[in-house]
Amino acid sequence: MTVYQHEMLTGKTAVITGVSRKIGIGTAVARALAEVGCNIFTTYYRPYDATMPWGSQADEAESVIAELRQMGVKAAGLELDLSDPAAPAALFDAAEAALGPVAILVNNATYSVNDGVAGLTAVHIDHHYAVNVRGMMLLCAEFVRHFQGEWGRIINLTSGQGAGPMPDELAYAATKGAVDAFTVSLAAGIAGQKITVNAIDPGVTDTGWMPPDLYAHLLARSPMGRVGQPEDAARLIRFLASPEAGWITGQIIRSRGGL
Image (cartoon, rainbow, N blue to C red; front, side):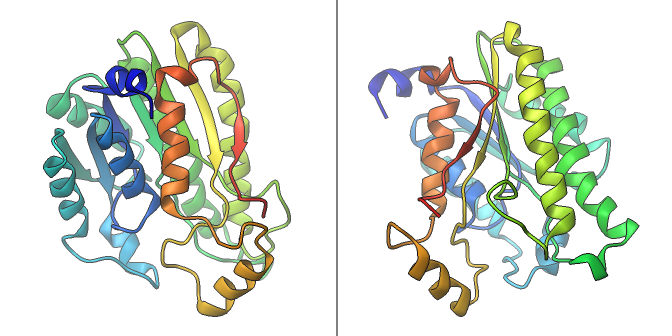
C-alpha cells in the first residue's frame, strides 16, 4: 500500500457487511482497511451463523469491533437481518450517526445453503434472493442516496458460478450471477457521480468451512500449491477501495490463484 493510498483512505468510513467471524473474509477486509486508517462499520447476524456447521462465538462480532478500535480507528457495528427490506436504510442511518458519511461499501454478507435440484423450493430460493440479490441491491441504492463525498466505492462479493457448474448450490449460484449482472449495469449508471462499482470472486477461500478431504483435493489441484486465504481477498478489496482504482469500474475480477 503506497503512502498516497494510505493518506487518501485515512478517515474514510467503510461499511462492511457479514463481519461475524475472526477467520472470515469480512474480518480480513475490515482489518485491511483499518490498517490504512479507515473507520469501520460492520454488520453481522448471529442467527444465520448458528445454523452453519462452523458456527461462531456469541461475542465474536463484538470482539472484532474491539480489535479494530485497538488498531486506532473508529469502529462500530450492528446486528442486522439483511433479508429485511428495511435493513439497508437502518444500516446507513446507524453508520452515519456513528461514524459520519460512508465512502466505501463492501457487500460481503451472503446466504448460502446447499440444495441440488431435489432441494430446490420456493422458500429456499427466496431466502437466497432476499440477502444475496435484494439486500445487496438495496444497500447499493442506499449508498448512492447517502453519498456526498468526492469519490465512492462499492465492492460486491461474487463467486465461481462463471468458472464451472455448481450443481449442489443452484440457488446460490443463480443469485451470485445476479450480483455480476447488477454490478456491471449499476457501474454504468452512477459513474458520473464518481462512484466505482466492482465485484470480486475470491475463489476457494479457507475460512474454516472446508472438510479435510475437500481441502486436500483443492490443494492438490492448485497451481500455486495453496488455497485462498481471507487476506488475499482483503488486499484486492483494499486496492479497489483506494484512489488508485478510480479508473476501474463495472468489472468482475476473478482472484482465484489459477484454480
